[in-house]
Image 1 (cartoon, one colour):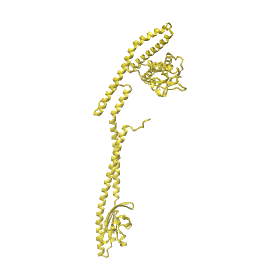
Image 2 (tube, helix red, strand yellow):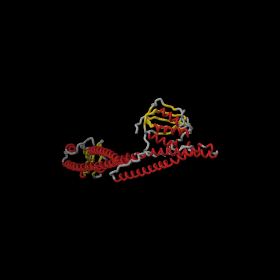
Image 3 (cartoon, one colour):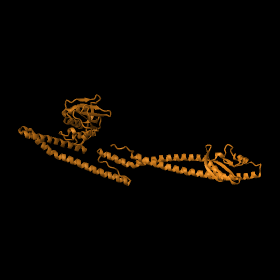
Image 4 (cartoon, helix red, strand yellow):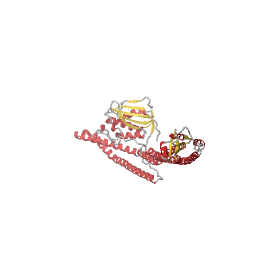
Length: 465
């Protein structure tokens, strides 16, 4: 089951900082806006209430004077003397129909005030309420004038509160957005600093995986990161020591086996030369011994070669060669002199190549096809678009299963088709090692029409080491 793709750690850290800043900004905006709104409304309500009670006292005094002076009219007082705020208005309400229409703005009446406020005043009380009249915001104050059984109502404009709150909300929003952007940049920068040591560890591990066993990390100023670097270096030392010990062991064993194998090979060759003097049953045993000794000798030679490659004791000696002629000669040397070599028309005649390594790669592939793939049926030589030269060896065997196509290039690995055949299990491993040393790659794919198609690519031009 495939693992779900998730965000990179750097992205998650950056998003974490951004979300924290967003949450903190929203909380700050809500708290600040609410606090400012309540303060503005409370302040406006307090000043409006104080002014309304002052004006109500003046109206009550004017009503007292009107009782003593029948010629005095309260409407004139409202129009000329009552001090209301600009864009504000006042209304006087009583049981007198004429008084109900008394106000500073004839277009507005008592019905424009909130019903809750008018009911409270009619119940001989006083009240204040934040309301909207004709689309504008007002603080409405109602005062009951007991000795005249009259309600005085005054509306104070509050649009400035909305304007101030809108400006405040805009400023807070821009500030919150700026804070979130800064937090995002800070989170990205911080994540880069935090992950830089891990990136160095990953790069060093990659170098070690590709053969750079002497790769080590520099010390860090931070104690925790320095501990990570030291632990990594200790692990790399242990891995390098183990691999070098195993490589030396394989090389030493191969060297130690070389002498007795050489002597044993010479002995069995002498016996094989005199096979006519040996009874038939003994010949069968001799054939088995001869084949196994030769296989053992070939395996020791391959192990010595792999040991030299692992130790870096082999150089890449590049020279300018006729690649088409060299391909024909290698095919003939390894038992396929009459094989069809398909050369692409775009193929250059000469390229820079290490002759020994090239012969080893192509020769091993031809031998592999002859021993395990029913024989070579076709060789292909063609350039690629990325300035590589491609060589393909096609056989007529059963092919290589998809699950085995990577594994067969490992040491001592065998495909199912070669499991019961004679071989060392090191030929394809040497192909992969030499191809990589030449700067190329090797793989196997299915041949059209059946069989296997072993392909390796090498650069057309390479500077000598």
